[in-house]
Length: 331
Image (cartoon, rainbow, N blue to C red):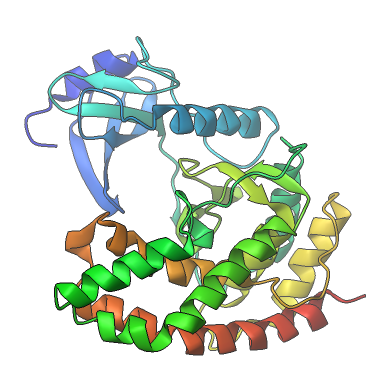
């Protein structure tokens, strides 16, 4: 954060002196993060947006922050954001010339390890999150289902036509796998549309957003919170945590997480094909994101080609994982 003074951060968030230096922490995605000692204790400071004016999708972030506030009030294990002295919106502060920022109390922690047993905490926490804001109607599927905005068949055909015309190396792979890609994209959306109940949820519960503290696991980073299918998210999250450091998911971890989820009020997962379609949707989203032109510099033509050609293997693996999930959650 070159050029930003610690006292400017302190003024933006109302931190009392003494104020320490800004110490850079590992970057999370496209967001820079710093540790800062203040008179109110150690703080974590995150650059929320690199420009002074809010993004055009500000309303989505406002809804995510409102849901984050619900989670804090409900006692979910997550740090409460610091309210700025003069919020731009939600709990976002502006530091002129450097963008928009958020701050949180800094937690002494370590990353989640592959051998940390958090299954019961995971199931209980996710069930509590799913009870915070239940929806009366079906929402639109989000990024993890290769959507937002929706990707109709005509869009895939347009990408293919443009790719062939401009000589993109992934175009032949898409042409060869077009029928399979279109079929899977349609199936993922149909699975979402037939998988109630629908809720507002965290939407990014995974190893990177779970920290281990002396008091136990803590869930962070609610920026992607929004509408979700409760059973599809639960199945995806249980699988993701059970796969840490393994070639295939640990069935006992899934069983414990699911049992805790049901005991805390979550609906039992039904054994059916498509339960893990969110995994397929995310793989498709790694293809659609660069084809839309988003973060295009971070995706080479060869990466896109490999993702297209790798889709059948992903689908086969998901179907095998669904059988493990079904056995672990039955009875």
